[in-house]
Length: 392
Ligand code: ARG
Image (cartoon, rainbow, N blue to C red; front, side):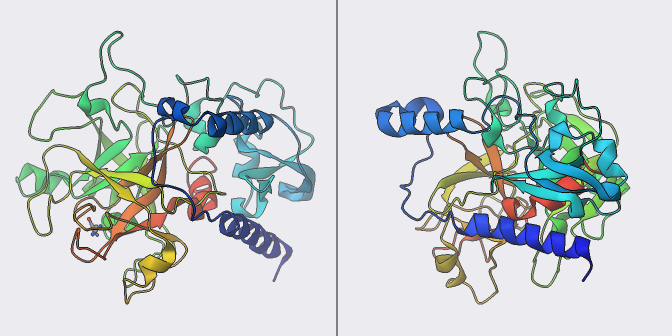
């Protein structure tokens, strides 16, 4: 085992450990927007104070954390990604070798000490940063991922602007022949990148897929400002297993950057130290409205609690791993279904930002009591996502 491999193994273990230690089964089933939390002032205050102690300003602090070995064996320090110029990483053979963990919470990168970083702080745009939505000041509610900007000033957000990070994947040929609306979902994580499921893209070439952003109603033209994007490349997880659906994650790169507006906006990636068991998440898509039924012309969503892994594993003969999340209504009925694959399982953080905690992967039937939907757990793949997006 060479040194860099050991480094990766250690890193992955640290990440895994920080996920495991924070399993919280005692949470009640609430996921209210930040504003509604005033009913429990003590929690609110506690939370607020904690956040101010941490790196919760709008931009992360440009600080050197622990010492480490940077690309080209240079002496370096672990830093937040946005404070290390990306060309430094681009030269690295294996970017994963240079990731590090900051305060057991954030993924950073081992950045060489001798580069002039002045001017970088605060100048990055959100599209560079598929960052954890936790790292923002809660007073800043107009910039960054996971916050849909309001529609017309003074007006209310329209229903088509509710989930502006949802992408619809369609096959132009099939759509032109009227055979298919969209076949999978996805989510916008940067201006160039769509996160989806590997089983959606497997076997398809870039020109066989189009990505539609800003859509709401497929049956109606002009009701939203949807934009169709040509696909530049598809990166399926190298260990995706089509027999078991392990590592069901893929990144689609768009040929041209999308412009963000009130219909198209990126969602945040989840923090790696948090488990969402017993929380209520929301899954959205244009998939079948019931098992083997018709797909939906309008984007639908449903609230689904996240199950404990144990309860989930007991419901299946198939192997459920800790890189999976399971979610569905405990009484059945509330679930994703065919055609929703690749779409996000969303959760709203206490600071109001939405993060994607899961990718719709598989299930047995849809909405059957005792048989939840299985999702790819996004927080298990943060280094992979970074490696295949901004560090590419
Ligand atoms: N594999 C399906 C798809 O390609 C998603 C199925 C999700 N099933 C469920 N019961 N949650 O669209």
